Length: 246
Image 1 (cartoon, rainbow, N blue to C red):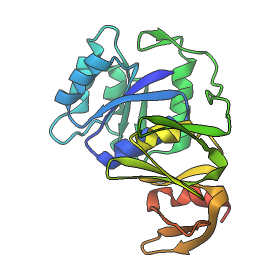
Image 2: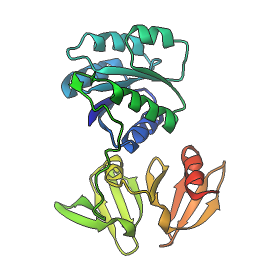
Image 3: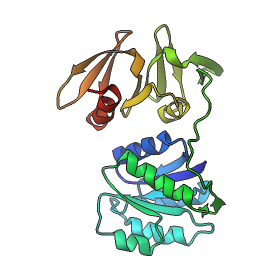
Image 4: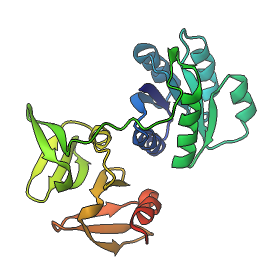
């Protein structure tokens, strides 16, 4: 599995890209930064194979960081992920593997990953030549670190997963589990087709949705079988509709 680092000064953009990369089951996110100074030090320490890089940072230029990355040995592959298309020529002069425009599209991200995995080497290591899925075989249970013990939770019983106050909550029909594992880590374990991201802080099990309640500004609330309400943000409405067919 390739290690990736994300550089973007917009937290929501970083979260969205991270989510799409983790959904592929082919990429491990080893860090993120919002400026050149933080990024270069972490890249030196964590040695990612890929760097997803925005061009217009708040006080810096991603092109400047790309120049520094090229000087590393081995040099991580650079994928520009930006809202601006006028830098494409310059980006490829810097040997960028790809140039992705915001807003991010899952199919476009998958095409980029297919391109990366078709290369013989990337970021100093050999890659696989095929683009098969890297999903681990499902056991029907998810291991969770809960208060210094490992709880094995039945995946079909999970109603939703949410994050709040630095903890991740896993809600089943009968019980709640709180873990210090980040939401994205739990999501990575849930390579089950029943789960879908509906908000930056929530995943839901489609099998446990009872009702869909329209809310303000083209958003929704999901009424779950246990009576819980889970918000659906505008970013994830399209995918939810596709998954549910409405």
